[in-house]
Image 1 (tube, rainbow, N blue to C red):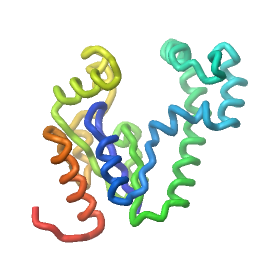
Image 2 (image 1 turned 90 degrees about the horizontal axis):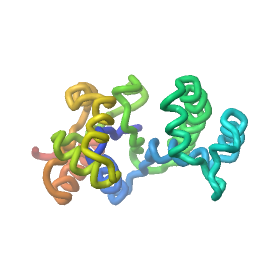
Image 3 (image 1 turned 45 degrees about the horizontal axis):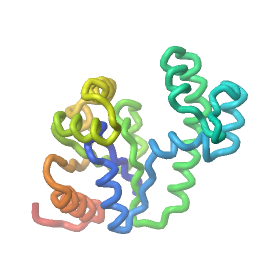
Amino acid sequence: MIVGLTGGIGSGKSVAGDFFIELGIDVIDADHVSKNILDDNESAKKLFLEHFGEKFIDKNNNVDRALLRDEIFKNEDKKEALESIIHPLVREEIFNFIENSNSVYKIIMVPLIYETNSQNFYDKIVVVDCKEENQIIRASKRDNKTKNDIINIMKNQASSDERMSIADEVIKNDSSLDDLKKQVIKVHQKLLGINIDD
């Protein structure tokens, strides 16, 4: 069974993902794969250099993300070119993960399932949800960004209601880490088909 784990910025899906790993479930973070593929994958880097050139490589031979972000923000063609390099390779990594995973179900952690209309890829979708003010506090602290930066990112993501419309299970993350862990265990048991009292 393939489970999509999703939630808005600062919702706590990464922490929930770590709790699923503690329960013996294989988890892949699609965002992490996407961010690192240009540095980790030689063929991706080669394609990137052909399209974008050496000016986007820093002194450590890694992609200069700040420069690249500015470039694709200003230029839609460049954004599409970058996505055409990254997306097929991310998909390949995810398929390899699915093929090689031995856990009873596997989790793909993806921030934008609703936005990309890709819910049909998953057997079940688990949404991590919390109040907007908690998203803003957590994400601005974690990413060292202003409140307005986080609000702008949230505007470009699905609303809580939109994510709820595709959810099979919901984990509410407005309390403590202990509470989050308990909810993850409950969802884990449901995914295993164990009937538990709510």
